[in-house]
Image (tube, rainbow, N blue to C red; front, side):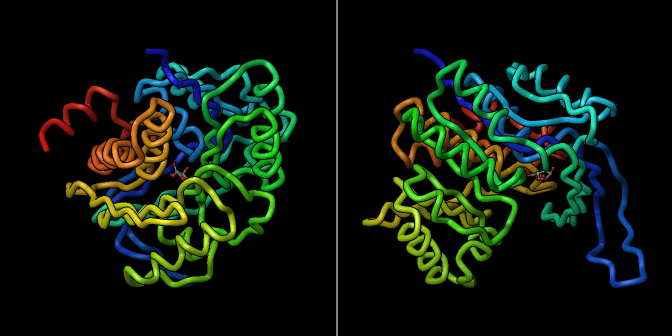
Length: 309
Ligand code: RIB
C-alpha cells in the first residue's frame, strides 16, 4: 500500500527541558529543578518527525535560523527520521525558535516560547510546497503567524486537500476563516482558550466540542483529554475512547505524536476509533520518555504496544 504523504506546516524549536521542576516560581524567587537537557522540538517539527517515524511520508514547511547551531541540529534530526526538509527556509535574519520546557514530576509542563524564525513563516513558503507536489493531508498548529495558518487552510482547500488543525498552543483566535476545516484537535487548555468554556467535567468537555463543531462544521472535533482519553464529536454522536494508562515522565510532544498518528491512520482508510486507538498508543509511549523528537516512538513500537493490550 502507498504511504500517505503529509504536509506539516509549523514551528521548529530547540527545547531547553528543565526536569523535576518543583512548581511555578513566585515573582522575585527561583524554582529549583533536578536537571536539564536540550532536545529538538517545536510543535510542527515534532509532528513532522512523528509522521515519518510512524511510517508515512512527511514534508515540512517552516523556518529555522541559518546563523545558529540550533537550526542545523533541528534539520539534522528531522532528516535523520526521513522528513523532507527542502521547503524549510534557512532564515539569515532571525534565530531558531526556542522553548523553555519546565517539566514537573508527573510529566506535565509549562513553557516559555521565543518564536524567532517561526514568527516569519509566510503563506508563500506554504504555496511553494503546495505548488510542487500533492498531499493526502495538511497538518498544522498555531505556533506560526495566524495569517499563514488561515492562508494554508484556504490554499489546501482550493486544492481539495483535507486539513487537520492541532489547536496548540492555547489561544483565543477568530475561527471564521477556518470554517469547514476537516479536523480540529485541541487539548483541554486549548479548548478552554478557543471556546471560553470551562472543561472541569464531562459536561464542560461536551459543551466545548459542540461549540467548536457549530463554529467550524468539521468532520470531527477531536478533544484530547490526556489520561482521560479522547472525546470526539461529528455533529451527531459523541465518541469516547479511554487512554492507555502509563507512568508519564514528560508529556512534551505527546499531543504532537497523537495528531501525527491520527492523521496517518485517517489517510490510510482506518475508522476514526482505530485512528484514535493508534494515536493514543503512540502518545502513551511518548509520555514515558523525555524530550521532543527523542520521545517519539516508531510504528513498530506502537504496534508492539497495541498487541500487548
Ligand atoms: O508540543 C510540544 C512543543 O511545544 C515543544 O517541543 C515546544 O517546542 C513547544 O513548542
